[in-house]
Amino acid sequence: MGGDGVTLLAIETATDTVGVALLRDDGAVAERVHAGGRAHAELLAPSIAEVCAVSGCTVADIDAIAVDVGPGLFTGLRVGVATAKAMAQALGIRVLGVSSLDVLAAAALEAASGTADGSVGAMASVIDARRGEVFAAVYRFDQHGGGRGSTPGHAPTGELVDPGSVRQDRMEPLAPEALVDWLLAVAGRAGTVAVVGDGALRYRALLAGHRAFDLSLVDAGLAAPPPLALVGLARRRLDSGVASLAPGELVPEYRRPADARINWEQRPTRPPAPTPAAGPEIGRPR
Image (cartoon, rainbow, N blue to C red; front, side, top):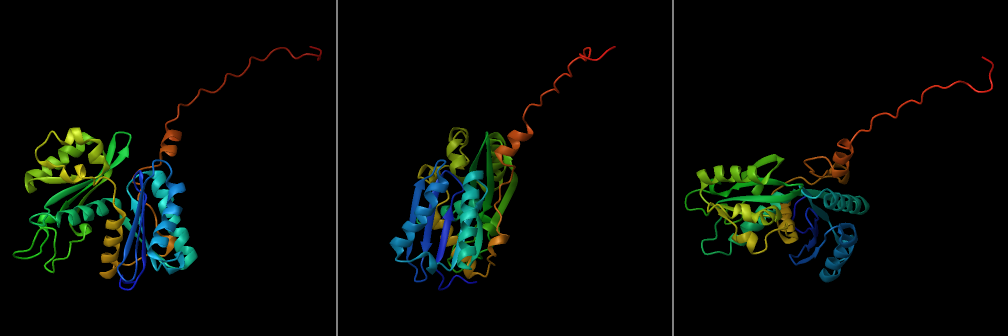
């Protein structure tokens, strides 16, 4: 399915933010973003209704759904992915899963396009994984083969580069100190590294101690993956021929077991209760 002439709904629940964007087939776009906290399930459906109402559409007008599949918060991802799958199944449409890290990188590119030189070199998306860890990926837009005179982060046509094509991933959750070591190694080859995401915001004091890290975008508010960046990246991917999925094929990218499972596996084991000592039987002759 291509993106042309498609009304596309984007669902963003990977972090504390609950966000929805609707891109109509005529290019009009609407967005709603709420501070979700732990209320992803309560806020998502009303947000979808809001963007449909603002856009003059009904749910039945939606042709495809893009959803952030993570990494991120377990409960948020479960709510967003389950909602996307249920809606797609009911409407008989397909879904496109997009990484939260790619959405942040796409948003950083869009933000950089409005700067003086309109370029971005190396950058890192950092999602707060809680429990003192982060999920992260590095994007080497400076290495994109756009040709002579091309602007880093942009294709020869002037369009934004898909972040997935220049991504260097670390699949395991990282301690903040390990993140700093990794990004310093990248900076040694690429120069300054722009860092975005709520993980960068949470550990800003640690990152700010190194001049190689540019935190201006996260300071400007680029912490949660924006729904508008999600719907825009999804549209570009559909236009380029990226295949969407049947609802049952969509799975979230948790990257580690759920907290409930971890707590269950790490629960203290109790020693078996002692067996009572056998006493003389009563009422039976010896």
